Amino acid sequence: MNDLIDVFGKPTEYKSIKIYPVKIVDILDFYTNVNCLTINKNKIPDVEIIKMSYLLFLFVISHKEPEFLEMLFKILNMVLKDQEFTLGFENEQLIFKVNDIIITDYEFDNIRDIILKQNLLSIEQILDPQLEKRLKEAEEFMSNKNKSASLEERIVAYHCVSGMKYEDIEQLTIYQFNKGLERMQLIKNFEVYTYPLLKGGSGDKIQDWLIHIEERGKYDHLLISESEFGKITNNIN
Image 1 (spheres, rainbow, N blue to C red):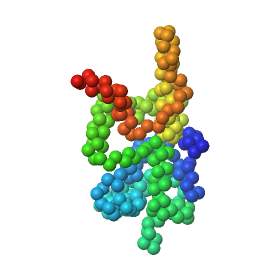
Image 2 (image 1 turned 135 degrees about the vertical axis):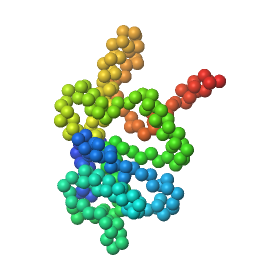
Image 3 (image 1 turned 90 degrees about the vertical axis):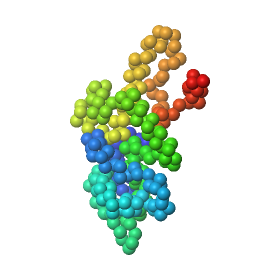
Image 4 (image 1 turned 30 degrees about the vertical axis):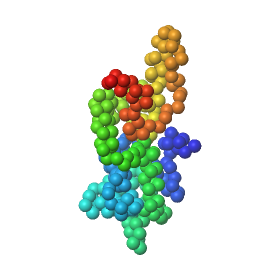
């Protein structure tokens, strides 16, 4: 049932704190600042950093990179809206307080996870730096090859297909917008390919537009099946 919260654009509650999903109208500000929540600190070869909470880690690196805390406050203002919050040390312990509700620095990891999940972001835990480098290179190659639509083009496409006014699209959450566009693409494919497949006697290949869409990891689109890999290697041989 929790998934319906994101579908309807409702805030997620954590210890009575409401965490609001980001809307399309704020998407550029969100993407500009969300990097403060997506650093993989566990890849830093320092045991003390790996052991510390993510929130404390941000405070540590802010001594040299103060913009990270500035970015964090912008994100928190965005997702907490009119809820008052403070962030700082009390009795030598880092405390995040929202509406007088105290969140420890380790509990903040849960809020971080909620913010990322609400807005369809994930952190890939890839421990091999060489593998990550190759995956990023492959992702860049595929992006250039497929010429993925820009955010501007995706918004225009959503307007054209749904008939929704631009001012209404602005009020969609990032989750609603992306999930809606994903389903629209499936529906369009169903409309375009159903008749030719039926006419050609290949009705069994028609994909129902109401099928379940699997959640995909960041690099899933770069993976191939064992059979596909076999075909490639056979061709090379």
